[in-house]
Image (cartoon, rainbow, N blue to C red):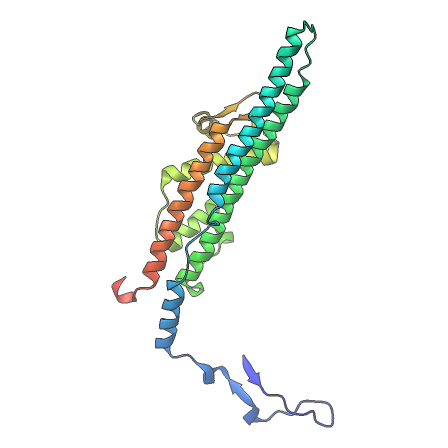
Length: 254
């Protein structure tokens, strides 16, 4: 880049330039020592946060609120059916129950999809923080160069450049959650496309059941997944903090 100071136009409409008007980048070189101090100061202020501070807590509140709503819906519809039976109605109208169960299914599906989106936010921001901490010049390969799905690519990127390993048990829970999310998003909850490995893993989790034509998700699975995301976010941020601290030290003591 060259900085040019513009002089009045010449008679033919072109800008007149002279050597004294042209200044090169070397005149603005920052001394290496100052660069190091500036970077150290920048790293000291770099926050390894990957999700908004109240995001996980607010979701816990939101989950409690929605479960109170759906419990109330079911209780009201069950009471209506009880009263119909008490009146001697032969053909009890259970359409209210059907509607309430459909509503509950959609709400819980949306919970799972949202939690997976929160995971994506965590991974995306973690990769960004890591790139800043180690310096762009040290990033030799990009996410698109890696194999795997969008989540495992980011895990590989973090572990490679951060020089750490995320807990395998924590990641296993993430794999189960993303398998469920993909089933909901791509197949509307139809489990026919699930692998045997995914089926086995899902069968070992609380509050989720593989039925013939759909996945049935209960509150317990949403809470289980919420805790898995919370633990994962904590693990990622703790390791990023270590990376940032390591980046502030002189190379001789790393």
